[in-house]
Amino acid sequence: MNIQFDISEAEAKWGVDTIKRVGVGLATEGVGLPSALAVSFLTFLRDVRSVTPPASGETVGSLSYRKGRLAITIDLLKAFKVVDPSSKLASNTDRAYSWYQSIRGSNGRPRTTVKMAVTLQTFKKIEAILHSRVGYLQAGWNAASSRLGQTVPAWVNKSAPGSFSERNDGQHFSMKATNGVRYAGNMADMEKAIRYAQRRATFRLEKAAQVKAQELLNKEIKK
Image 1 (cartoon, rainbow, N blue to C red):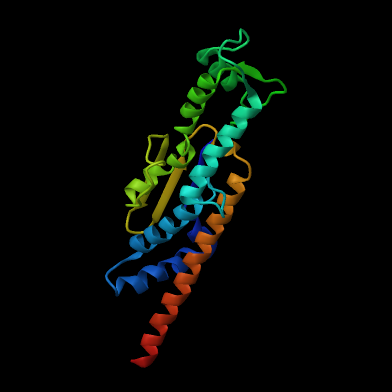
Image 2 (cartoon, helix red, strand yellow):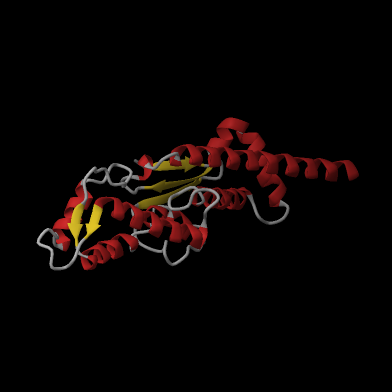
């Protein structure tokens, strides 16, 4: 499931004329409406990343990376029982990994009431594979970040499905980011949190429009 935000929705809520006041004010500073929207969209994108797992609003940056790795290890401990290398019950890495993938739910968490026996070496191999994927869901926003010049940490700088599009025909300005990671829409409360970030972005645009409109009015009064 893709999660999208189109900044032109601000126009639908507040009216095209209201939002364009931002551009009128910034035009006098040599910036213009498209740049104003880009700045607002970048702020929105930062808000989105702050609620995209492994981040969770209050836990962001490198701390969320460590949290994501820890969550994976805890999940693996729920699914596997480490046994002595000489045990005949121990499954090999390929079989253990395939089984683990088969018991993961739509949100990526394991669903099982039994544990598979593995050696410590096998456990560490599977753990390393999954640890290397921490940040993959975050990477779904990289297409937008790249186009807008937003840098991302090394653990997020990986290839993942996602896209960014913008429209500027002189009358209509819009930007849209899409996270194409298959399970993006299945993460607990993620979509709800992004909708909240969207409302915040719309509110910031409206406030910016009010400020710029007042600045213009004050200049006219002084003339």
